Amino acid sequence: MQHASHPEIVKRLKRAHGHLAGVIAMIEDGRSCVDLAQQLHAVEAAITNAKRVLIQDHMEHCLGDGVEHGGKSARDALTEFKTLSKYL
Image 1 (spheres, rainbow, N blue to C red):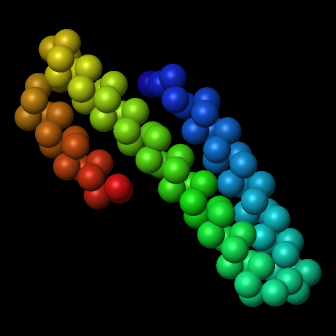
Image 2: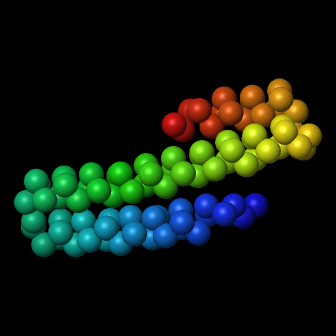
């Protein structure tokens, strides 16, 4: 299922992918550990933000709208929410 947020998430992940490739090149070039740690932190933050947007969008649209419009029972939504909460 495609959500409205998916193109933005893809954009964030592609940016993180580019940063990660840059970190690999930095390691191969022998750059300082401080520089590497800083760039790895940026990659990690980009991925974390993409994950957060994905989960929030899913909770709002798949769970919230699903229960509101009768497409999903409250029990099923709660079970799915519990599963999602492991990734927060």
